[in-house]
Picture (tube, rainbow, N blue to C red):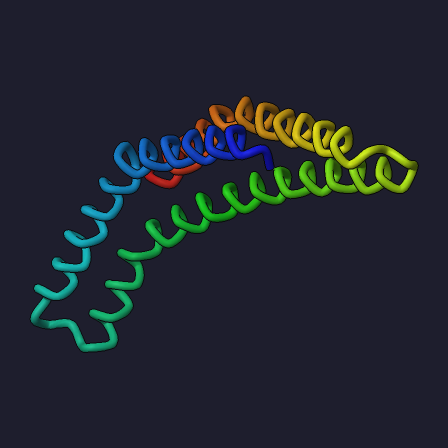
Length: 138
């Protein structure tokens, strides 16, 4: 991808994930650790009961991580498809007799457009993840 566009997309995604981590994930991590500590404080529970209790404490965070991972993978897949489309167009243009310099310019423009298009998708993706995580906490 055109390097500047790639950098902008990467920075936007990283910023969205950092915000999500601060606003939602950290609180869930704290709750998980407090819950797990309560499990361990039960002197009457068997080892298996404590283990099941800890697993129940970990479940919401595991679900949250799965939501974030799936959404980021979906975003990456869409971006990859766009870049593959650009590469196909460039290959077709070269095979049709286009000059390498001209095709390189078209490829760079196409890749930059992919980056810009996906940059506009980041806020909606972040909101979707935030809403999904909020629903987990209810």
